[in-house]
Picture 1 (cartoon, rainbow, N blue to C red):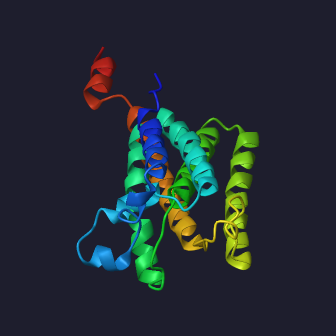
Picture 2 (cartoon, rainbow, N blue to C red):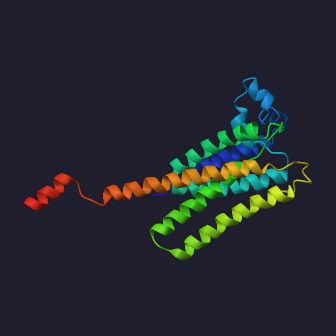
Picture 3 (cartoon, helix red, strand yellow):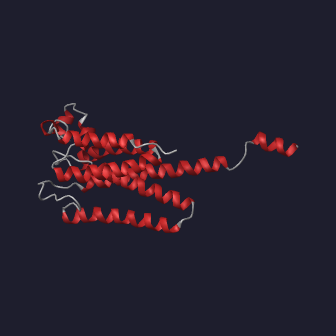
Length: 213
């Protein structure tokens, strides 16, 4: 039985609620100097703050849809993806882009969830040999890579009007998120393969008993 996407709806609601409290967003966004002083919660809370209503709508809508899809398929993979991407994205921004003094938004986590969902679909349809769906999932992943390339080349986001919102996109967040999605999805693939392999043969004692009779 597939579970209800309670985590997805709860976290999406957090992002919406924080948008109604703009005065505290500055205390929750990514700020390397504040993090260095011990405000470590910013590593996680920065993802749930946004720069504009347009920014919030696109990020939150994508998050709820993608997270719900992942959660109803495998809640443990969702949690692993959320935790890893939430922590690794700001850490890599701090390491590779030290000039960034503020970061907000769910788009990096959205990228992780998007790739996790596509990888899961790819895995399930390779197992059942539905090659049309395999090709579709592969094309979706290629489209994701093209989107990141567009962002790097143009300095603009594909959906949010970054110029109107006066924000500078950080494609690195989407790259790190995508790699997290690949990692979690790949781990699920290997774990699933091991489980199938372990179930393929009966226990030794059972096999011996059947043989002796």
